[in-house]
Structures are given as C-alpha cells and as structure tokens.
Length: 560
Ligand code: HEM
Image (cartoon, rainbow, N blue to C red; front, top):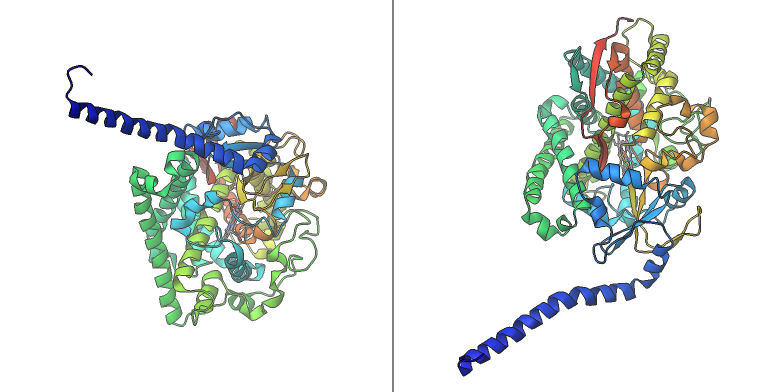
C-alpha cells in the first residue's frame, strides 16, 4: 500500500470488502440453501435412502446421468435398470422414485388419490394448455367425464368405414415405395393424423392439405424439446429456456401446431354451420346392427377366449367399459361434435378449452399410434415366420376378396392382435408414466415408502421386459398373449395404455384403428427389415422412437 494516497486507500479497502461480501454470498447462499433444504426435507431424505440408486452430487444430484444424446440417455438408463428393479434418483432437489413391479404399479395406477401428473408434465403447458393429459383435480374429472364417452365402442364402430378408406389410401401411397428401403414412420404419422381428423375431429382431411404433415413433424420436434428440458437442468427455468435457441424454435413450432388446430376448429365450425350430421352413433345405427362384444357390460374385459381385448389386460376395468350408464344412447357423439355441443352457452367448455383438448387428442392420438404401427412393421420384417402366420390369418378371414374389413373381422384378427400387443409390450409408445406423489405411499414389493412430494416414474418399458414376468423378455413372441399365459400374469404387468382411472381414453380407438390399418397393409404387402432389434437406436423423447428411423422394404403380395 506504500505510495498510495489516503483517498486511494479508502477506495481500495471498500473494494476489497465489497468483493469479499459478494464472494461470501455466492459461496454461502447455496450452502445455506442446501442446509435449509436438508433440514426441511429430512423425512423425504430418510425414506429415499432405503431405495437403491446411483450416488449423486450435492445440489445437482444425479443429473449427470442424463448427459448425452437421447439415444445415449435411453441406453444408459436401460442398462442401469438391470441393477435396480426399483430405484431412486435426485434431479437437483427433486426426488424421483422409479418402480417396475406390477404390485407397486397397481397401488399407484388403481388409486383415485395418486392421479396427478408429475411436475415434469408442466413443459407441455404452452402446447396443451390445461388439456386432459396434464390437467388435475376437479378440472380433470369434468374433462374425463366429458371426453371418455366420445371414445365408446359404439362411436368407434361408426368409424370403421373411414378407417378402411384411409388405410387403403395409405396402401396406395406405400405402393410407390415397393422395392426400396424407406422409413415407414413418416407414412404412419401422416396416416394417423389424417384418420384422426376424419374420425374424432370429423373434418375433411383435404381441407388441411400439407398442414397435416407439417403438424406431425412439428409435434415430433416439440417432443424433442420437452425431452431436452427434462434432461438438461439449465433448460428447466422458463426465463433461461426462452433465451436459448430451443426457446425460439419452440415458439415457431407452437405456431405451426396451434395454427393447425385453429384451422381444424374453423373447418369444423363451418361444417356444423352447414348443418352436417353430428352424432356418429346415429350414422352407425343406420348402417349396421349393434353387435354384442362383451365389452360394454360390468364384467371384466375378457373375450370369449379369455384373450386381451382392445388393449386392456384381462380383469382391469376402467371408465371406458363402465362410465356410460349416465349417458343416453342418443348422446354418444364423436369427440369434436360433443365438444361443440357442450360449448353451447359456454358453461361446460369454452372455445379456448376446446382448442386445448383438440391439441391434446391430436397429439396423444397420432404420435403414439404412428410409433406402434412403425414398430409393428419393423418386427414383421424381422420375423418372417410370424409374418406368414399373420398373412394366413388374413387369407382365412378375407380369402381372395379385396373387401373392406368389418368390425366383426377385427374380432377375428386374433393372431394379428397378439402380434400388436407383443409389439406394445416390447416397444410401449409411452415408455414412462409420471405421477406426483402427494402423500407417503407404502409399496408392496418390499420395505419401501415413497415419500410425499416426490415424483414417481412407472418404467413401463422395463416392466414389460422383466424376466420374472416374461421368460425370454427380449424375444418377440406373440404367444405371450395366448389366453393361458395372460391369465397367469399380474394384471399390471402389461400397461401400454396405463390403467385405472387415468388410463388412456383412446385405447379402444387405437386398437381398432391399428387393426384395420395394419391388416390392410399386411393383406397387400410382404414386409422385410434387416436391422436387428439389438441395433435399434431407441430414444424415449416422450414417445418411444427409433433414432435410426424405421427402415423397412415392401414387396407386393401375390396371394390375393
Ligand atoms: C398405441 C396407441 C396409444 C398408446 C400406447 C397410448 C398410451 C397412453 C398412456 C400410457 C397414457 C397415460 C399417460 C400418462 O399417464 O402419462 C395415455 C393417456 C391418454 N391417451 Fe393414449 N395412447 C394411445 C393412443 C391414444 C389415442 C388414439 C387417443 C385419442 C384419440 C389417446 C388419448 C389419450 C388421452 C386423452 C390421454 C389422457 C387421459 C387422462 O389423463 O385422463 N391415446 N395414453
């Protein structure tokens, strides 16, 4: 300090003390916060210690386990799952419990208490608003009561003709790819968007033009972004995310998605203003007598052969089977028709809420079935002996005729159904289901209690591959769904559509549509595929996909 004047000394001392205070705060704030967090979460931390899991670091917990690309993360987490049938991870201060045992899954999914989605679903909010996928409490209950009846089997039977027409158009498009190796997912996405538009939304797909394809691509990219926000902690706070390039891309994608749904709504309003018929059931009743399917009664959802029907495990009932006692036959309408009817007077649902539900159904209804059908085709290509049995079944049902499939035909497609269910077992389109746990939950599989305040991940992908439930769990074996095998398994060991009060409302729609779409494709083509399952680059960006694309080759079938 020699040679400095008095005033210089004063400035220098105050500089030192200001920077000291600054550094003190920077270092001590996280420590104080950490101590406070530790003390206030003592109960949670104690219960969490009982669960096995990887060692984490202070403050960030196990976030480093989520480093790398989507494919890397999927591979890494899957390999971890062999060490732990049950586990915990800390994502910063958030405790995540991961379960795979059907007895534990039953406790959560069958409950009317643990029905709130994990806070991770909040990243969907700018896209889906308060739509049925992410809503909670009384709002969700009202939405569920309104929407579930629109996917009743009697409504769906009215869609059979449209499923057929669209499936034939998809076959025509696929014919142009014969002899080439191509990614079938784009075709499946386009087909599923168009089918949804014409059925659940009741609008002409031609009105939407190329917008349907752009919409499907924007949805895929939105899922990538949401997945990034789940795995990269710096993208979690909205203010920081909005400053990044991902925040800007999201804005553009949401613009594409929301313009599309607004166009759908406008087109529907115009159709209704012209006085077009609303109720699909009425249309169906004019054209076909109602078959008894055994699905509408109060008994378990079991077919005469005891097999799994329409995607629900034997013995599990949900509101899709039982809800409709208070809804008169005449009131059964397709989804968007009913939304508009309910909006008359604006008391039950307003225009903005309809838009949120349309966004939700369009997303849940197309991306999941596009993934399921693409995996199905790849698996057919890899298993020619199984494919031959599907072809045999098609020939038995349809002979040489090119006629459309009827609802009764779909009940006869027992082998194809088993192949489809086995596809959903190995490649469940929703590989993880998340819940927010509001009160401590004692589990059945061991001395574990999930603490209140934690997030729960039901690892469907891993449950479906547990060797104690499915011998040879990684082998594609449609006979896993033979009645005698399903009867001996726990109800909750097969949950591609979730189960219980918050199960998928589109389950029966999806199964019927997939049966008609895939049977039409199988009647017309032989599928070939050369990339073995062990080389699939799986990524769980909300919906399970193949990062390497769904490459197949088609040859026309001569049998018909
Ligand atoms: C293979 C096809 C499908 C699969 C595997 C599937 C799977 C699922 C799963 C696992 C859930 C629960 C998600 C969660 O709790 O996080 C769900 C919910 C839902 N799904 Fe699907 N889904 C499919 C097709 C459809 C279709 C075609 C629609 C509509 C047309 C649909 C509409 C919905 C809706 C609205 C929900 C939210 C239900 C609620 O929270 O009450 N899904 N789906």
